[in-house]
Length: 458
Image (cartoon, rainbow, N blue to C red; front, side):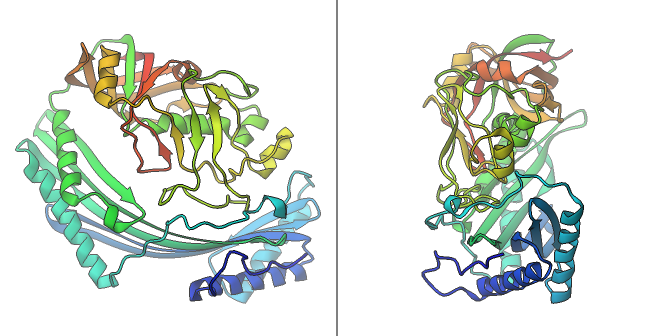
């Protein structure tokens, strides 16, 4: 088993934290050699974070965490075993390596179990601007975070007289560093930060009460939406839901608001996952090159997006990430593949071990207001509940709430309804995507108009 070298992308000496992780990885490889492993790969991570919540203007919880972990996968020929530990002492590392080797010794060989060859590793390591540590001490961060949450909650409570109670506001800050290495010579460091602020309030009284929330999440603290804006938006969304009605069961057009539309694409990615495809446990198995969306739809990942929540130079196997089409002019052109599933399918990895990164769907460059006018009459969905989605069969059924639309205008809020359909029909029935793209997570989508779904009501 060969030894990895220092990362070729290090123009500067390693930081103290990087050097510490690198030294740990050297010890891991020393123990894998002693265990007569033919190859190995590892991931070492250290994450620190804090979450602060307030309710009625008073601190409610303060939680801090310091987590670390080592995941090791070893190979004995074409047999493999994995183990993990949170203890970085020599004794614990040696025990973990021995455990992984013991597992490998009793498993069946599989020619598809292999490390990424060097030619698939990144050739460059661009700065994706994912790491923006705050300037505060622990005490200063606590004071700042609680102030932001208090301002956010107060803005929501003061925004509308119909706001009757609060579920509180919360602020979070996390920072992490990881090292990925394998015995084929790959070494990669990744650093990142994430900040969040959210607020949830209740409007109305007795039997006419509604709750809703709003939030923001960013890599860089300074770019987080203002606490006043987040609080006021939470209040607005909550009050809009007051006096909600039930509707009778019908079939009608549906718009999934941008705040929930990414979930529809998440179901697509689950159905395109390589392990589901080679096991034929997906309604999209065998559909490569089929038209499964309208021809104006493209769905692409952008893993090198600056400050993106899903951005990464390499995947969980050290394979270089790249811009990748999954849907091209409505046609399915790629599955979501890592090395193992690609081998099982006789294909090439798409660099998606660990999932997709910054997935986006093309839009029609129209506003949500114009998309509602295009729908004319139907349901605008702003909340989905439950987990009634089966990506093996494509069946879709979830609880929902939102607003009824007539003549291109929102008329009144609705609740206690269900949405049901079949994902393949829903995808083909997309009749527009607005430009109100939600960039807060790893999947980016504007509001999506679907031609027709079954809406279950009274």
